[in-house]
Image 1 (cartoon, rainbow, N blue to C red):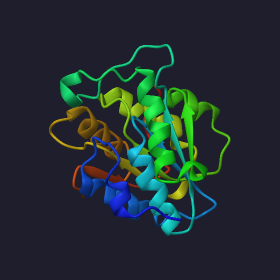
Image 2 (tube, one colour):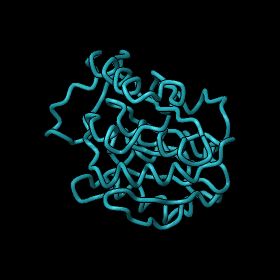
Image 3 (cartoon, rainbow, N blue to C red):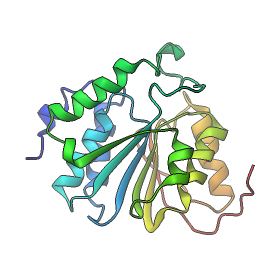
Image 4 (tube, rainbow, N blue to C red):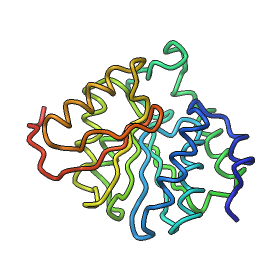
Length: 206
């Protein structure tokens, strides 16, 4: 059974309600044989909205990637003044709990790994929707795109969270990739920047 908006609204999330609904309807359009990949799980709410939207459409599966409490250096995204400890193992456990609470465990795969490593190791289907919501610094956001670009379906959407003045790194990353011919100019849905890969990236590896 697909969880209702009322039930999804009960999930703890940083993402504004309107943007969660946008994710729902974007996921709704992804073909069943393609993957939906989220970079940055946190507590799992956005993954649930994506999965619910997918199940209301063609039934694509969601993979959500986050290192959570793996050893390794992290940088804050800028939310909560950078005070959130994303390595707290309770966050990963809470993500699992939230996913289970809305009955989406069978439709979401949590990948406990750094996003670039997960991209290098990916053996799943082509990606029809890539939601980038990890490290919001410019070089990190561009690195996430590079790690997953080769896995994108030719008709994929690449959605960037927090494309706003509060997170200039995301804005600069998107602008740089547009200038390089890697993605289309963004269509804005609130703070979500919706782009498409162009398949002719001129950017050199850094």
